[in-house]
Image (cartoon, rainbow, N blue to C red):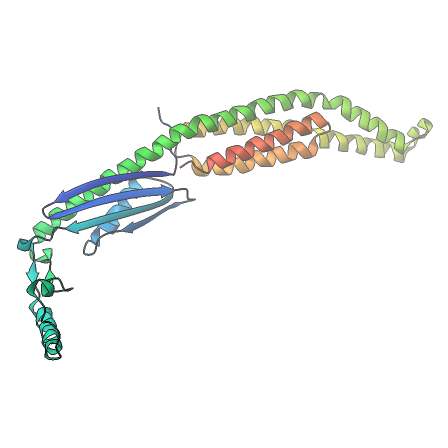
Length: 298
């Protein structure tokens, strides 16, 4: 069964080839869009595009950071001496020795920065290509582990989000029942307003007053009619359930949360009873809780 994914996760993989070894870590957190940052070892610039393309193929949203830590073993067979730098250090050492300083040892000279160098793989394109291919495979595995981690978060989010949607559905059903009771409240309010407009019932025959009564009745009926809002809330509940079965749904759910809140606000403003207002406030609270969870959905 297809389920939603979260946007927070972590994946790690390790690899080695020849005298190279490395580890790759992939992390992600919430984000409106997909943003990918890659940090690779010097000399492997081609991995940047590969890593970003691979992440885009697996993920849809979130801030993703990919980091590669690579090192090469310092075996004597793989090292060479930079004679120019060594000669420069020897010249400086001889000057210092003339002033009474202790002459440097061979081990000391070899440990100076730049004296020993790794041979560049450009001399052997096949060897460099093999290392890059092995690195790429490790990046794939780290991204797969990240995707698995995000899917696991989605599995935990799904029942929480579904629970909030069920709560909204129940509150809408209660609101529908309470809305029917608004009729008596409207009638009482209209009677009170009518008495204020025409204390003497004999005045009701006045043509101008009759028009005002009709307008007042229409205004009260319109303000208290919440059928549209309840119908739309019911439709939004159905849409939310459908989106959860059709990931990635994060952006659409974000937009739907705005629609949910708009209808809940209108329901509260149109309410003619304390009970319906209370249900509207409960709706807003649950919608806000749902919105916070939806922000974690890919």
